[in-house]
Length: 120
Image (cartoon, rainbow, N blue to C red; front, top):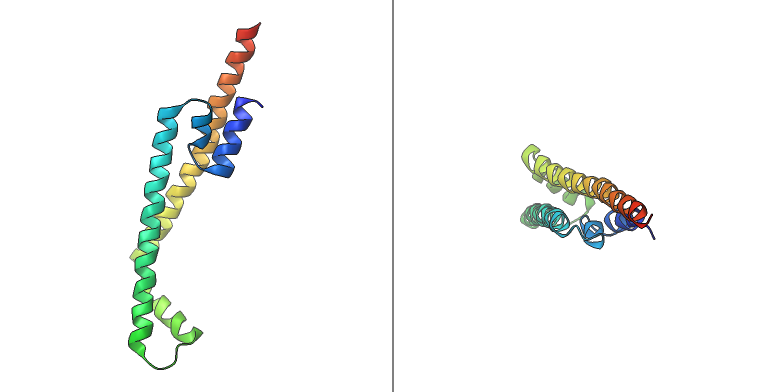
């Protein structure tokens, strides 16, 4: 299997930076993995905080808990800043993923060309 294909599949279907590791671009792969993990952890923490806030509002309302109560509490909790932060983290995760696939392909292609011309 060519380095470029292996790198793209691992980065695209696996995790950003994994393809870099497979083609021995360890520093670049580690930086990409750490960046993606940081954004992913921050997203999960913020989403958990918002979920707990929604749960507290539903419990404080008392009475029966139905979908309308949960929806109303969720709409109150999703203020502009909280929603913006979640969208920012999702955007950064997506950018890391896209960058990882494109860069892994380019680096893998370069290694493929070096191997091809080195053998002749």
